Image (cartoon, rainbow, N blue to C red; front, side, top):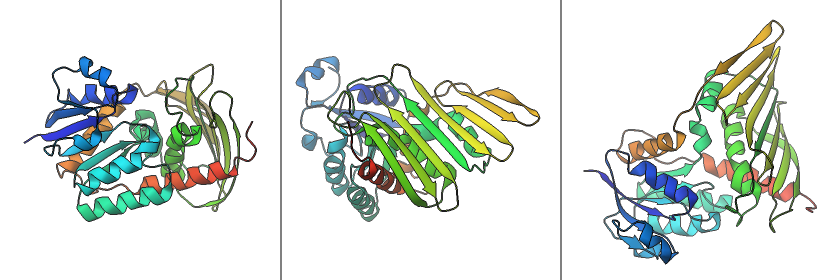
Amino acid sequence: MPVRVAVVGLGHMGRLHLQKLLQMKDVEVVALCDKEEGRRRDYPSFPFFSDPYELPSICDAVLLCTPATTHYGLARRFLEEKRHVFVEKPLATRSEEAKELVEMAKKKGVVLRTGFIERFNPTFKRALSMRLSPFFVEISRQTAFTGRGTDVSVVMDLMIHDIDLSLLLLGGNIKDLSAFGLSLVTDKVDVACADIFLEDGGRLCLKTSRIAPVQRREMLVYEDGRSLLFDLLNGRIAVRQKEGGYEEEIGRADPLKDELSEFFSAVLGSTCNPVDETPIFSIRVAEEIERRLGKVR
């Protein structure tokens, strides 16, 4: 029997998720939900709801693609009903809420995943496979203003991706950090820079903007004898070392489809880790960065 799923939130990401779901085997979309009734006309062949709390009981799983500030309340409700839940990042806007959701998913015996799509980026997966030993990593993420995600700061909106990647790549505990931010377009921080010092001596610099004139997603890694540039946007790697260097084309993949496939594999029991706890730690780091932003213009 296919997994019966509902998509809540039919904005940009919700529509992308729906497109992928309709291409997947063992998945049946049984309901769509969005507070804007006008979107009902775009999907006449699906049962449509404007209230997420009215979703039919036949839904085995729910994909939440709503504003970040709604994630905790909606996810909590669906977990209480013993439904599997996939939440677009961040899992919640407070680490205490994220921890509560993780514990609830464990108690109810259901799958809980957060949409950290960059984990499935083939260029980042190549970086993990290289078993790097960096002493300094700089991650830059820049995008033009879209108007999406403005219910939270750029730290929770976009930098959370790179916090997640750095925790996977570097591990280790944070010794100290400093941060700087600018609020230029919205009433939240739109540009942020965080300098993070690890207890093992490593250092990490995160630079994120959602109001940039260019689009860029790059990870620069320094380790003994060489530097490596991982272009997460264009799927390329450049390596420079004493003996010269080389470049490698990684190419494109479909990370959104891959992360959804991983979620449904967990729902169907094909993976042994139904609940991912790592978003708790990413949110804790994001919270500390927000606390350290200091005076914001």
